[in-house]
Image (tube, rainbow, N blue to C red; front, top):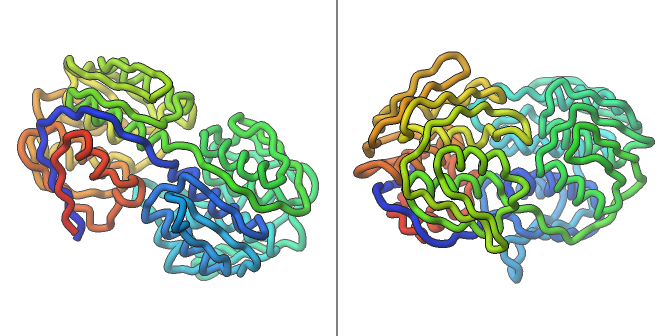
Length: 419
């Protein structure tokens, strides 16, 4: 069992460098299925989710290896692709479902288990399936597998009922090798979408409008291998900035992409944190109290749902009452009961959390339910009086945060990592 023991009450100070984006790395590695030959993908974070997608690629017949000479780099050799993805890996991590579009585009047949992942909501794959069907695929559900078939994908018009990041990426990848032009309407606008499009375009795809609500993809016959560096992780950067704010510290987050973080930075400023953005990174200074603010999660460029639990921890110590409304996932308040164990005053009403700030949090034994909840509990433990024991049975935190313990201890935190 994995446990973190956090001794709180220490202001964090210093510099820390953000790792590459998990949510960009996973679909880009999946897209390597479409690139014959050897591709080099850089700035890959050291995460269990990345290890899982690398194992999926290997199971599909590709050779995927971490570079021995270049840190945070994965080399992918693609000379053959199998059409069946392994049940034990795809059901372990939802993002493994990304492989359905690339496999279908290359093989004309894909058999993918229904995915697993964090228990933060149903997150159905029907939007993915609808998109692939619009491109000419015949899709069936059979014994827990999604089976997609086509003689040749053809361009089509795809309207997404919800701007799903995963569905946008699935359709965009499949359309890159389809015959003719495709239009994706109500597309997700996240920076990770643009990064995937940039990766594919570097490989010879013709994608326009990524990062907007309408994406046009002109299909090509083949793609070529590339050497590509992925974007920094905006959620990790935001989490590290909140760590500085919640402890009343002064932290410089280096390598963060300012343009990807506007909503997070605006809310940190509203909370009373001082934010300075410069060529070296983003500096947060929090010497005064925390102000209560209201937050509503929305698809990008709105406030990210992946930062909601971390702000719940921060606002637990605010002066006044805050309201957080969750509109993206229907079950993303599982961290609330654990924060209440630490003394937080939080009341749930439907999809809103009403948070009345308290003078202090107290260390307590708590349990991690999902990735971002784990981050929220670490932040609460950093600010709490005494010792917080964080039980992470399923290693959720390691799924999404690269070396988070060593990064925080480098800023002055006292955290013991027990396997």
